[in-house]
Length: 247
Image 1 (spheres, helix red, strand yellow):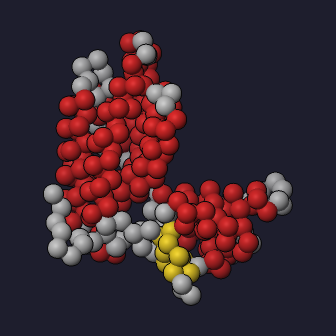
Image 2 (tube, helix red, strand yellow; image 1 turned 60 degrees about the vertical axis):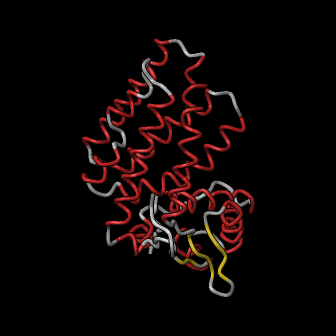
Image 3 (cartoon, helix red, strand yellow; image 1 turned 90 degrees about the vertical axis):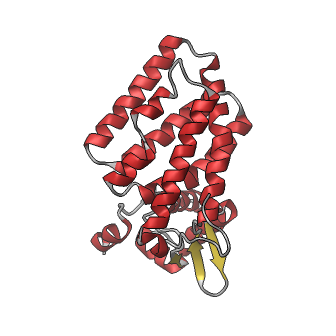
């Protein structure tokens, strides 16, 4: 049974050190959220409390609480009498996501590096760049996405702006889902410049708001083109809304 769970979900069954309902609900939430963010539960996929409980090894009560929390965060949707659905991604929602990221990212970089010494900035960039290089050599795109997310989290925290950090944390969930969907082959990875030298150059002394915006615009266009061109898009319920096209 455990082997079957690992094959289906791609992760080990979660256990806890105590039996408190709140602790179990939190652990269930963390495990289920990670499956959604990394697209091991695909956008649009339908799930039930019983299925989640059986596969992750939790009781129905903590799973129900975890799903309610994820519903509140917008990562799942309640389907009356049918269970739940992992929140789909549409071309329109991806477009809006990158629009928001284009506004937020330059502010994060400017504030984070504003009071950082050149030496500290160089060390930070070199450390994260080396992590990305190793992930690319290992062809581990999932790790690449996680490391990029951690870099931006570090920068968002360094801004000292709690509201900015909260906005980033809301955006990064769907950004991770989008990049996980598209970074499944070398062509997509190169097209988006994700983890490339161009990205790290944005953190250097020559960075400008315009250069960051241009980089995000390039990633934006590339992601939309990839999503629209791949057969798996339909399976993931990433579809073009009626009457709309990607810009």
